[in-house]
Length: 232
Length: 121
Image 1: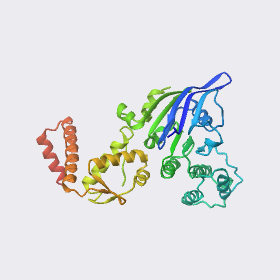
Image 2: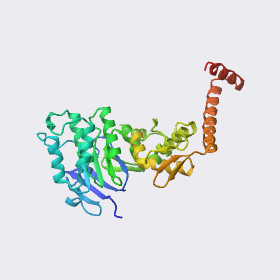
Image 3: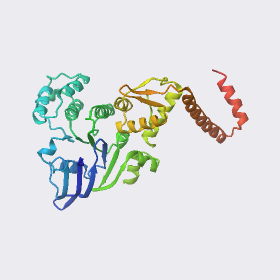
Image 4: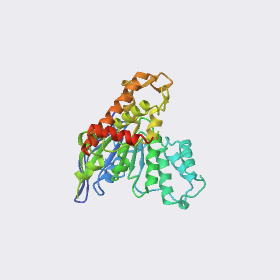
């Protein structure tokens, strides 16, 4: 079977600033992978390249063997760092919006998840709290039967209780056999659910490993390894 | 079930350990049905792949067995359950003795102490 995602010698420059340098890695199927790095190290840029929102300065990205395109967007469900939902819409309209865009959107699943939040489908997004808006966005993204979920900082700026909600929702609902790529700098909250980690620093991949082997080898948590490696 | 994990040791090893203890102590009864990997992963908040790996190990230890189409069950083998009970009893006791020795207790003093404290029960 074709690799789910391959990045080959990726470079991205903004002007004379190199944001990504020779980034090469492969994402397997059926795994939860953490893309870990401090702020400003290139995580979001890499994710935007994979989602065809930016184009690489050099190198290649292949998703199921094809470059980022309309085809690849059909199999990738992407949660951006900031919400893009039109806040004048109702929840029901947002569901419709996703249904129109994505063939794999499972409205029944979204409705079920919404029910747990005690939200009314007819309420306007602008009337919801920021936390609820973020939860709704996650519900929309996770309710697609995608092959790859890419979540950019899903834990950033949310309270600990909401972090639990986010992790539980991901674990219980991602499509079986699919992979999940989660970018974050909040490692201790998330490391338990990761199969693999990719450490990114100053635009370069500095470590890729299976999480449990890394713990076994270093005898400390992933969070601790990360802190030691990137001590300021 | 409520397992507590620390992030400093491999999660799959901790899942195995907690299941061994749960079965040895009867918290999971002999022959009791085990939830599906996905359900367990969601309950314990761990990765389904890690859960799967731990289940396979528990199966090779024969503490858990799969009945085709019906799912997984805890063993009813009393001898096996007893062996694991002894394994953990020994492990924890040795750890306790080591700790008490560090505090300066001799084995005799330690026995006296256990009797004294345990006598309250």
